[in-house]
Length: 300
Image (cartoon, rainbow, N blue to C red; front, side, top):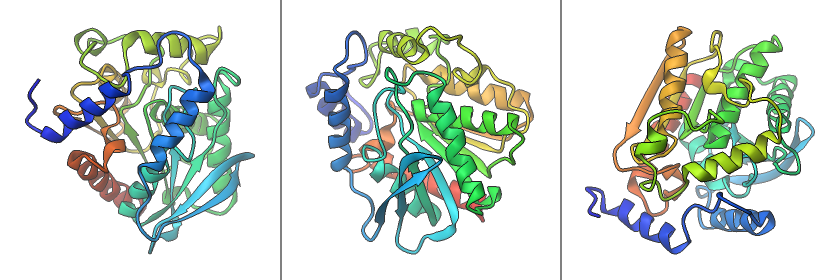
């Protein structure tokens, strides 16, 4: 297959060599989690960024302070990994580069993961992290929440839970390839099946069952079906080759129905969370830079 962007072809070759989607069927969670953390080691933060282990909302977290970052401008980042994989370490570089572009300090939450801690543990931890920042004296207008894949869904769920708890809204939400619906609803699940080298429809079905663990699929599990009234402005990045593209379209629609400002960008030829490949993908670096500017504008 020929691509207008040859770098995305190289990324696809790399992923093919790694075996592609590993979420369908039985998963060796310790091995998969270690592998994702090792990928994070290949994607370092910007030079001069300090990394500090902290506690946020009763959970381990990392505080990432890029060179010249403002202490009172905060990016609260939730990592992806289908709610069962990932950690602050695996997404350290991505979160730090976004924060650097925004001139902000980032906090990455080590929220609890399924299957050991199924839904709603992740949402409880996301809300606790946001509350902790407010209790530390960070103004809500100085916080942007962001996340990729499951972390994008968790970003939305945390914003909804904060609204329902009567907390003030953050300044904005940035979603990268969000997984925001536990069902495989939407045309992209069929049309893009086999074209997405990162995930498959079958993998998402299995991951949803693991995350929900028999609990009802409500709007905090599938925020793409929620009423977004009262949420802050939203920026959504999704690739044209993603199985999950329909989730992003549904999120943008829900925002519009609620009168919430939203910008949906579908990047041609890009795959699930292409930002994470910024070390070898110019489109990843451009997406991070653009999003960093948007986050910085929300925090100014």
